[in-house]
Image (tube, rainbow over all chains, first blue to last red; front, side):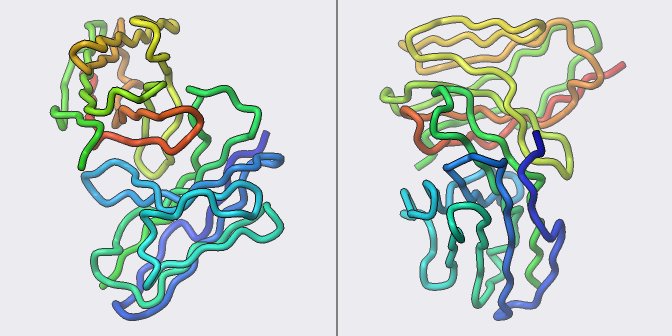
Amino acid sequence: EAGVAQSPRYKIIEKRQSVAFWCNPISGHATLYWYQQILGQGPKLLIQFQNNGVVDDSQLPKDRFSAERLKGVDSTLKIQPAKLEDSAVYLCASSSLGQAWGYGYTFGSGTRLTVV
Amino acid sequence: DQQVKQNSPSLSVQEGRISILNCDYTNSMFDYFLWYKKYPAEGPTFLISISSIKDKNEDGRFTVFLNKSAKHLSLHIVPSQPGDSAVYFCAAQTGANNLFFGTGTRLTVIP
């Protein structure tokens, strides 16, 4: 099966600019996650969707970050305006509803964002 | 609050020897513990997991041990191979919910 697709792979922007990331999960996967991985840290959940509804966005900085999942398939994550501390790799992951616990998720290769 | 901790940022091991990666956690409600492997410029890939009701799970060269009383788990790789060189993340979850990740350990296997 095709994996989780993310684009772009790299993005460099100036602070206060806006940026958007795109994710296409594995076909049929109902659950989609966006994680932020800052250099030297483990990935941290930003938002979790089930189909096109939000399950958990408690760690999403809602004053500048927004995310949507169109028709329960593709998803976009937006940052507006960006800050220097937003420099990180943004990982998208997906899993199926029937997936047994403990099998984790399938991650995409991520988008590396550098804010200068 | 870091619920999953990996206190060793790096580990170097000779090819053919055993690699032992350690992980500690604070939340006794975790149901599953997982190990992910990450190569540069790639996303993490699932390696092996263990249920909280077990103390050992083995898959080929990889074995995970869980000590619930100590809130500690470890990943053993035997024998270690150069292709195992990567960053290893420990993660934990309750049910099918969010994964909590540690900060990772960079393993280098020396040929």
